Image 1 (cartoon, rainbow over the protein chains, first blue to last red):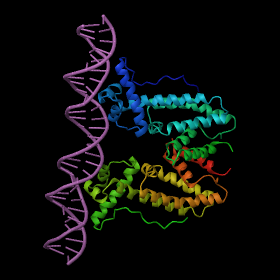
Image 2 (cartoon, rainbow over the protein chains, first blue to last red):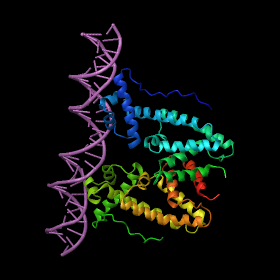
Image 3 (tube, protein in one colour):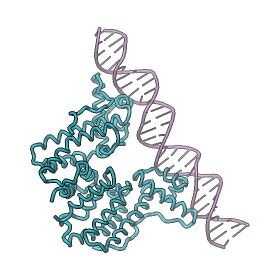
Image 4 (cartoon, rainbow over the protein chains, first blue to last red):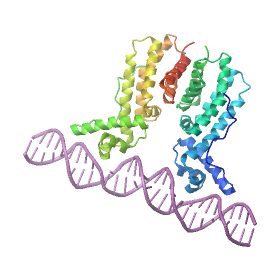
Length: 190
Length: 190
DNA sequence: ACAATAGCGGAGGCATACCTCCGCTTCAAC
DNA sequence: GTTGAAGCGGAGGTATGCCTCCGCTATTGT
């Protein structure tokens, strides 16, 4: 059930050749990332252009649809998340899983857009989800083989449990961590 | 830690005297309830008026601000939820708590607006939250006294844990129930 | 240095939502 | 019945967002 390394899914958007254009392209991505994190997936495109210091026309030339822009941002975020899975390879099974999941929460918590996207339908999102699973599922499997995690929990279950907590509002990060702890105890073998 | 029965918080909105007006008022509330459930707290007010079959002016006369309308709906929903707590009084401690929490999830799951509101700031929302706590906290306390629930979990923790799962997206209700089960296992004493 | 051309920005047309205002309608008290 | 007033609806002003189009500008290859 291994997947190809990462095909860099079919985004119809390419980094331009001219350097001024490239600068704008990057500024747009950065601004979009910021705006989506802050306001969720339906942040105003004109606001994004404004933040990037470019005209709205430039935004549309680079990203003809909202979806194009959103997916471009999303791919970057997902890549970072998947790379984080490698960082925990050295830890013992349960630690590795929990550490990655905690990183998942901490990482995604402030980024409403990612959270919303996690459950959106689209070839592209499906592809990214596949990558996340490819990164995280082995961590769960290892913990299950070590007898640390209950066998009746699938990776999908765990991810949705955790992302539920990710999406919830807490009074402070301490509470979020505590509650996440409860939830993780629930998937642990007793 | 008991509270006054329920003061019916300060909503500046009253059911009108004239029967045609009353009919419109009720239709608006029903339409709003529906729209908020479907589209979340920022459903279009003109759409709500349309659904109710009244002019937009009528909506504004009855509910001068979006907040007024939203709160009126919200109060109704919260009342139903609190009443559900009485229904489980006869069950053993753990069952009572879990049954009420499950009802909470099933009840709120489809109502995006309620979920969003649960964490909003406003005197009114605070008052409703107090009511929910008054209804649910004793269930937790009872389960803790019976040694069924870990002592380091507050009612607020549990509610946020559960409402996180409420807010998450699942492939089907079966998965939601399973994952909720994991989470509840996490707050149970081992 | 100088085209040729890729890239730029934002004006402006379209859609949608908010909210106010006021002439008309309907109720209900007498 | 009559009539005063409570209630009605929606036109229309304002704001905001989407997206297109096109005259101007900056870059790059020669």
